[in-house]
Each structure stands twice: as C-alpha cells, then as structure tokens.
Amino acid sequence: MDSRRYVICDIEATGLHEDKDLIEIALITFEEEKIVEIYETLINPEVPVSAFVRELTGISQRELDLAPKFHEVADRIRLRLEGNTFVSHNVGFDLGLLQKKYAERGEELKCRSQCTLKMSEELIPGMLNYNLDALASFFGIKIRDRHRAAGDALATLGVFRELQNLRMNTRSIPLWLPQHEKILKDVPKKAGLLEFLDSKGNVLRTEATTDLEKRSRELLEVKLHNRELLLKTSDVRYRATGSVLIAEFERLKLFPISYHWAVLLESDERGHQKFAVKPYQKEVDGIWYYPTYAEALKKSRELNGKIQDRKFIFRDGAISKEEILLSNQKAFELSRAERFPTPHLIILGEGRTLGERSFILIRNEHVVGYGFTEASEDKILSNPEAWLTRNYQRNLGVDLAARRFLRVLKNQRQKSESWRSLSVKPVVQKNYESQAI
Image (tube, rainbow, N blue to C red; front, side, top):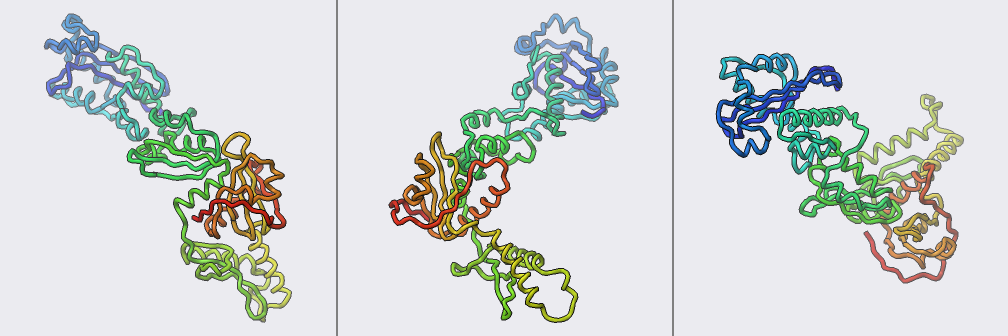
C-alpha cells in the first residue's frame, strides 16, 4: 500500500431513482495501512423514506427526521475529502451524488477517486458478480451491519486493500474464482493431458503436464497474465497418463506440427563435415527439424560456428586434415547429443492408477508406441512389444518430443521416469492396435 491518504466512502440513499438523496454517509480515512478516523452521520433528506429503504437499512423515519441536514455537515464532509483520494464501491453513484449535493449549494467538490468496482473488474477477470457481497465473500471478509454506511465502508476498505495487494502482486495466498474452485477440486496430482474449455465446449488451451492439479491451478489462479483463461474457462477436462511424454504424444495428435526443413551433416570432397539445411522428406536423415527455413538456417549457422576452430579463422591456406578431424569430432558430438542415447531403449514411468506402469518403446531411433500394464519391470523389459497398447508409424513429431524429453530427464534431480537400453528386438510380439498420428 502506498503512502497516499485515502477516504473510503459509503452512502445510503433514499433509492436509485434520479431524485435520490442521502440518508447516511461514512468516511474512513486510511493512511499507511492504518485507519486514521471514522466519520459517520445520518442525514435528514427532508422527504419521507420508503418502507423498503427503511427495512433494508434498519434506519427509522424518526431517526432521519432528527438527523442533521446536508448543509449542516457539508463542510465536515468536504474537509475530509478534498486533497485526498476518494474510494468507494461504485464511485459513479457515491461521488456523483455528493457532487450533485454540493452543486445544489453552488459549490464544486473536487478530489481524486478510485472505484473498487472497476478495480475488481480489472484485477479479477471472470467473476460472475462484482457486487460488494460477492467480493467480500471472495476475499473472506465479513460484513457487519450490511446496508449501513459504516459497515459497508469497512467492507469496501477490506476489498480495496486486497485489490491493492493483487495489483502489486504482494498477496501471499493464491485465489481462484468460485466457479473454478468447483471444477478444480477433483483434478488429480498426476501427469496427463489438460484442456481448458469455454461455455460451448471449445478448447481454449491444451497442455501436457507432470501435475494436472498444480498446472491447472497455476493457469486459473487470479492473476492478470491469466486473464483470457479466467474470462473464458467454463470447464477443465483432463486425461491422466502417468507419463508427461505420453501426454505430449496425445497433444501432438490434436495439434500436429508440420516440419518442412531439416538440419543435417554434409561432407565435402575432403570429408569435412558441416551442417546444412535441406527440405524435409522422409528419406532425409536430419538431426534438427523446423517449420520454417529461417529457423533452420539460424540453427545451422549457430552449429557451424561451434565447430569452427577460432585459432585458424584469419590464417591463410586450406584447412589441414588435423583441423578437419577436430571439426568433424565436434560436429559428431553435437549431433550425437541430439539423438537418442541408444538405438533401442525403453522409458519407464508411473501409470494412470496405483500399481500400474507406463512405458514408451523406441526401436531403431524411432518411437514404436507406448503401453500401460501392471506387469513387473522384468517382464516388460523381456518383451516390451507384448505389452504395447498403442503404436505409431514413423512419426517425426513424436520422435522429436521423445528426444527432447530424454535431454530434460537427464538433468532432472528427482525423476519419476527413467530409461533402459534394449539390445535386440524380441521375436514374439502381441497383436496390438495400430494408430498413427
């Protein structure tokens, strides 16, 4: 909270009609996280008040008849407002009515203002209701003496402080919209595929994640950078996979990536290898793949810069055999790090349920498929093809996802998945469902 002086105001009026008038006002002066003063008074509107308003506020006609008229308290109100920042929940109503009353006296009331209604609409996108009751409930603020000026002003102050904390990102306890809390409570702490849906069932966002609950809560936490999802999300759909890589395969099935250019190693007449860009075709054995030529060219230049020996950049004469061997060794190491660790391997991970395992099978440096089983690790390793539940024809997107995953897995301290090298492909296989993506 900044050091400015704020005056939080709430007004009770004779109604919402054009000729409305004040019947009660409360002004809470707030500065440097402290309430400096609370000023409240009934105001005689000099007209009978409807039974509805009397019942709503609990203020009797007799109390109003005995209360001071506006001109008797106008200077006290002005003294507290001018030079400070006026805050209320719907400034257009509260400040507008006060300015009208001063205008009737031939005076002008000038002060800066902040509206907690507008602030909440900006900082909490997606709320179904922005009235004071809804916001107080959202922030866990109890309103005492609802529809009395002092009680509502104190609640508005509480909402204002919470909104300031949200704006400055100083709130330590995360918040979720009430309608999102209901749909998030059943999301499991499992790896899987996560989808955010709008009211018509259209998919707004899809993610493969290691923790469905954590990621869904991160993306639906009340923060400005989550604005679009907060505004549009009506439901969250998920599919537990146990393995985040299997979830990524499923995401690629929904949103495949088209690769048009490959970066590969080419040799000149002396056997000197350099990275080059070629149009991607199935027979092209690339190492890196990109949707655009510009991305592929940038990568090839970066790689060729790494294999060039800086000691010989400016010297005359052709490159020596020794330099070629050194350069080729660097190129091999760069390309080897990008490929699978071994031609045949299996990635083992958690399953969708307790006791189940997931696995992903790679043969000849291509993903064959994945499976779920409660069989022991030894049985899976002895003949993984027998336990496959889904397979892929050669698919570049799936292969690249598996390569990236293994590089990330290598650097993780806590691993929920691990890989094992396989030597030969078993003869006995299971007839499993074939599904290419």
